[in-house]
Each structure stands twice: as C-alpha cells, then as structure tokens.
Image (cartoon, rainbow, N blue to C red; front, side, top):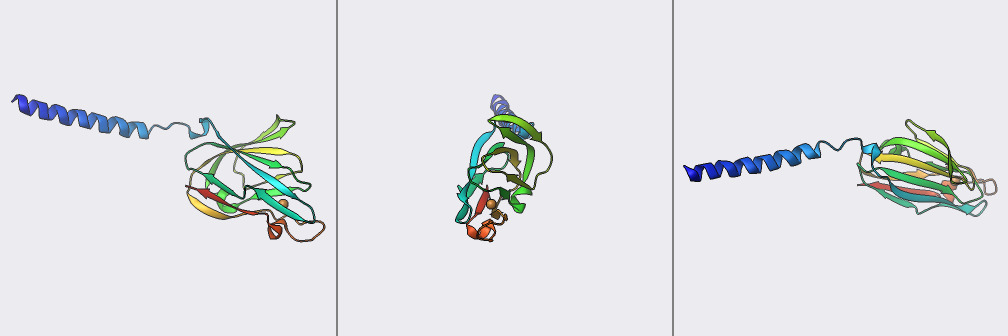
Length: 161
Ligand SMILES: [Cu+2]
C-alpha cells in the first residue's frame, strides 16, 4: 500500500513538472516589449565608384526583438530593400533620428527603408519566419556610372534561424 502511494506521488510530481513547463512556454507575453538586441548595417561607398552594405550578411533569430540601426555613411541616398525579409518579420516601429535625437516614429508594416546621406534610422522588429533571403539590395541609380547600386555591389543576405 505504501509502495503504491509512493509510485502515484512520483507520477504526480512528474506530471506537475511537465505541466508547469508547458504552461510557461505558452506564456511568452508581448514579444515586442523585450529588451532589444542591437544590430547595425552601414551604407558605404562613393558615387561613380562603388556602393555596398557593411556587413553584407545579417543574422537574426525568430521571436527576439531587434533594433537594427541603418546608417548612411556615404555620399548617396540608399535603400534597405528585401521583399522576403519584410514578409518574415513583425515591425514594432521605425524611428527616425536627427543628431541622435528621435524625431519621428512610424508604425505599421514596412517593406523598405530609404536613408539619405549622413542619417540614421532604427528598425524595431521581431522575426517570425526562418529563411535565407538573398534579395537585400539597393536599386538607386548611380549618377555617374548610370548603373543601379545593386550592380555595383550593393547586395546582401539576411538569415533568420
Ligand atoms: Cu544604394
């Protein structure tokens, strides 16, 4: 009789542990209100010579909140444009900065962002889908070479795992 009670107590303990971890994993709350992980991408290059993303590969993980700083340190305007990436994330907001001060917040779905020379924009988002996206590019036309920036090297890859 005592042995049997011990056995059922064991089963009860194991069950309660399983149930508590199960309910914990279902209560992640508001994913857009986590502490953001900061990442940066810089628009580089010189009109007539080259244009590129630094780095040209970005890595993210689903379910985490990211603050991606997009900095334009070149002499031309550029686009951060990846159709596949924009469909694999949930955007919390885009913040526009001026002299390191916030001057605007944009909310809603964002498909691409253009940043003008010497300016910075922050894209706050949570990746919701995994994938390797090779369509990061800028299609602005170079005023001297007449080629689009993507053909002059401004392409990149975004990996979400
Ligand atoms: Cu460009």
